[in-house]
Length: 275
Image (tube, rainbow, N blue to C red; front, side, top):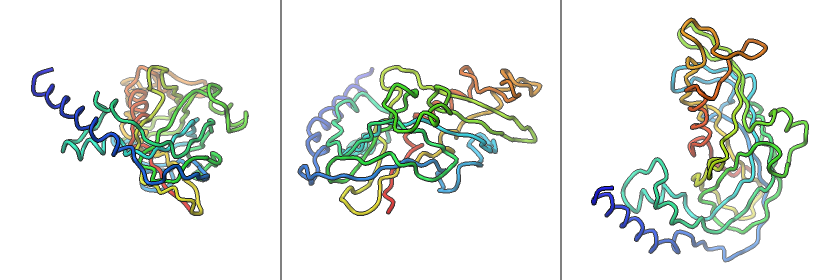
């Protein structure tokens, strides 16, 4: 690291150390609160997630899309990248070493169990009642583990639809007259905090008013940079094929890696209060 970068990191650490108490404070003073929680699949526009065009120009029509999510934690501190932007006047697209200096603040609530979400349904799936504290939720985090590793909130039948994986999708992708029927499953590697999407920005007041905190999963954002051409040969045949003739999104393909990146992107999620 050159001297200029070293000075930047030192300045960041000093600022964060000095401002950590301010970043983690809230005005609720531990006032107890219980609130309902839910998760829903949608497109970023608010439309149904069944059909959309991604950033690679593929028109995607999904016939299946589901995942297992949980635990979920709601925090009082501001999302790390947002605070760093204002402190240092820079845009931080990814975590830097200084992020480790942040405390997440008060845990305002949590979902402890794992739930299966049909991303094409659009109807929020109840994830139970969270006991916590009143306050402004400025960030939250999602955990994505394979079924069975976390106590289940969904029934066995729902969990079985995932076939032991954290994510499953199937559908058709079309571009320039080419149509590819695809099928894929994904389980995030159990390495470090890979299975946790941390510091997702939020701005939801948890104050006891009627309604529930709904986590939104943007299916189109998860698949935003997937190139389905990477799962077929030059002649259009599948590199790997399922028993019913769909092209597999295999772990060596650009499609798989881009899907994994989208799943781990904060931009694929949001939190809102719905009455």
